[in-house]
Length: 130
Image (tube, rainbow, N blue to C red; front, side):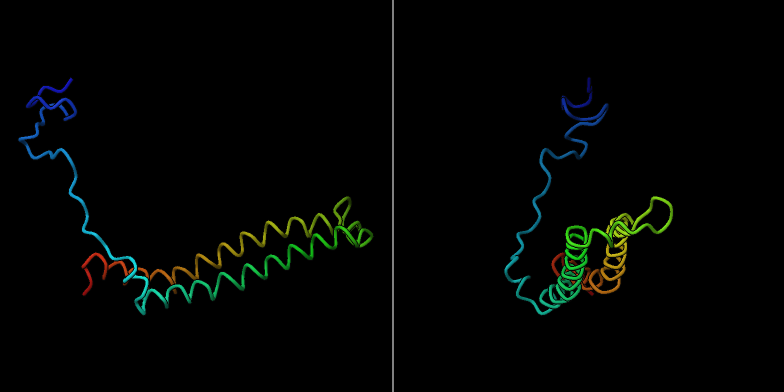
């Protein structure tokens, strides 16, 4: 049980008088609509869409091709490559590989192209811009 200053939620020996406030300070209100209308924010969204939409379309086409081959090209998908490993199994596993590759590409893209812009926007919002 806490003993300092009669504050039941304070740590041992710490009281409200020692500088512990009852409620944290509220951050200043931010006009998000104004932020969204800035040139930098629009550029950030354009860059993100320029990567995400084509990559999503490419992956969906790749997945659709796999599904169509599985449904309509049974002999091709059943073709044995090595032992019991067939084309269908390899293409199915490549679905997982492509997911990890896309994730890595996006992380690299975001680190190089999106994060610097987002950092500048955050600095402007927080008032720490130079």
